[in-house]
Structures are given as structure tokens and as C-alpha cells.
Image 1 (cartoon, rainbow, N blue to C red):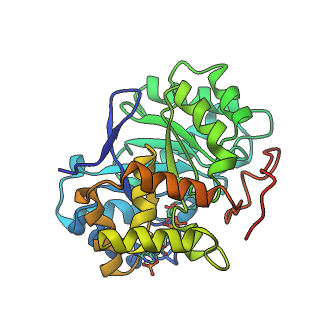
Image 2: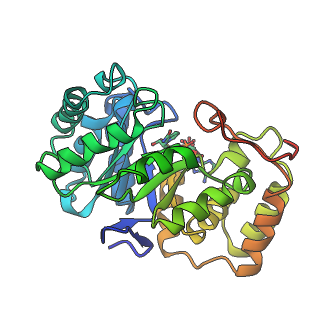
Image 3: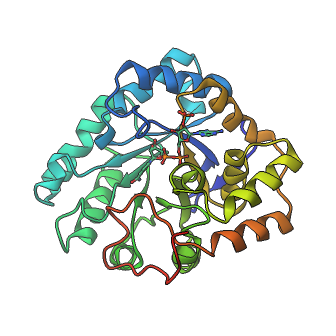
Length: 303
Ligand SMILES: NC(=O)c1ccc[n+]([C@@H]2O[C@H](COP(=O)([O-])OP(=O)(O)OC[C@H]3O[C@@H](n4cnc5c(N)ncnc54)[C@H](OP(=O)(O)O)[C@@H]3O)[C@@H](O)[C@H]2O)c1
């Protein structure tokens, strides 16, 4: 049983640490995604993140089978992506076909299905797309599956909320201290509507920022005090913000470090505040394809 979990607004419990197979060469990788997922599960992680776009849906369930862990003990997040028939035109039939393809590949229903980004639906048809997903929940095709989205800006969330009979439970976004200033008001909007945030790219400050910036010494100092590396400190910061940490690794040692955070003690409020303060000195986003358009960035330097 994992200890660090969050409650979704529909009552489901979701493990706070997820292992994703959409980056680091795991996407479209066949057996590598199966093996990585198996190692993650054997290390104790109970939440797997996949998407149509990654071409790893079948591998996600294959990893669960290979681990011998019962399907019911693992939380699966899947996403309707733009490389599918749904992108062609947002019609009831196209959305249905796209979802059916996913269910066939997974061989099970996911626990949570997200719209991968606001550009998956045809322009102006986010609300319609949501309604078609709701119909699939209601007719049993996605019975018991929670619905959410990813990379949704406030205007996209408003479009869904204007029609939703089934409330969205999660928005999965790039989230770490270097985008905190930009997304803080988005997080407030989400919390007002009971939408839990999930973070992808949570290790961006140490892996993708050119120098590590002002956070690097802060993370290293806090890590040294706890016997943790900077990556582990960032993941704890994420979870302690009430955000699901969707990370990844192909390296068994790193996977074990990620899994061990489930039982690690919390950072102190003062340590969290130090990370917040250092993070808000910089605006740095790695994944630029979704949340840059019509979503203003704060006037902060990159370094
Ligand atoms: N919704 C979306 O649009 C979207 C976009 C991007 C990603 N995602 C999802 O989120 C998942 C994670 O995304 P991400 O890769 O950007 O997450 P990330 O957590 O920022 O980075 C993961 C990388 O961190 C490295 N790592 C892990 N532990 C480490 C440690 N202790 N020290 C140093 N490096 C460490 C891993 O490399 P090693 O293999 O070398 O350990 C791995 O490649 C994806 O796989 C995907 O499922 C979703």
C-alpha cells in the first residue's frame, strides 16, 4: 500500500508518485517500456502514466502483468492524444473510435483518462469533446473511469466547466519551481473547482535548465541535510504542494530513489518556502508546445 496519495473529487484515491513511459526514449520503445514499468512497480510505484501519443498503452498493461501485481492495485492514467482519429474532426464517432482503440490496446480501462492537450479537439470544440467523453462514461464504455485533461489553460478549463456534467478531476501540466509564478493562479482556479494538479517535467530545473539557476544550491543544501539528492528534494516539494509527481527513469537506482520517497519524511515548511523563493526568481519552461500560446509568462529572467 502506498502512503502518499491524493483524493480526487470523485472519491478515487490516486498515488502521489507516478512513473511515466512518455519520455527518455521509453515512448514507442516496446519492450523497454515494459521492463521500465515492471522495475517501477517492483520498486513500489503504483501509478503508471501513458498516452496514445507515446504508443505505450499495451506496454503499460504488459508491465503490470510482468510484475505479477494485481491490476486493481495499480492506477493507470491514459490520454487521448492528437495523433489519433480524434484529431481529424471532433465528432461523437471519432472520439468514440479513438477511445475504443485505447481500451483495446490497454486491455483494461484506465483509472483516469485525460485530453492530452487543448489542441486535440478541433478548434472551438473542447466543450463538445468533453461531452462525448462524458457520454462514453455514461453508456458504460468508460464506466468507472475518471475524466480530466492536460496542458489546459484557464480558458480551456472554463470551456469544459461550462458544460461538464462529470467534473474534471485532474489537470496534468509542466510543474516545478521555475513555472510556479506563472501557474500559481491556475492552481488556485483548479483548487476552487476540486481539480487536482499533476506535474510532468518536475525535474526540469536540474535536468533541463542550462545552469540549474538559483535553485541548484538550495536543493543541494536541503538534500544534504536529509541525505537526498536534488531530484528527490524536487519531487518531495511537488508532492507537498498537493501535486501528483509524474516523473520517469530508466535507471534502476533512480527508480528506487523515486519509489523510496513514498516513505520519506516531509521537507519542513521553511525548506519549502526557500524552494518557492528561489524558484520564483526565474521563469523557465521546457515543454513549450502547449502552454505558451495565449498564456502569458511572468516577466522574469531565465537565469
Ligand atoms: N501531459 C503531457 O503533455 C506530458 C509531457 C511530458 C511528459 N509527460 C509524462 O510525464 C512523464 C515524466 O516526464 P519528464 O521525463 O519530463 O519528467 P522529469 O521527472 O522531469 O524527468 C525524468 C528524467 O529524470 C531523470 N531522473 C530520475 N531520477 C533522477 C535522479 N534521482 N537524478 C537525476 N536524474 C533523475 C530520468 O533519467 P534516468 O532515466 O537517467 O534516470 C528521467 O529521464 C513522461 O514520461 C510522461 O509520462 C506528460
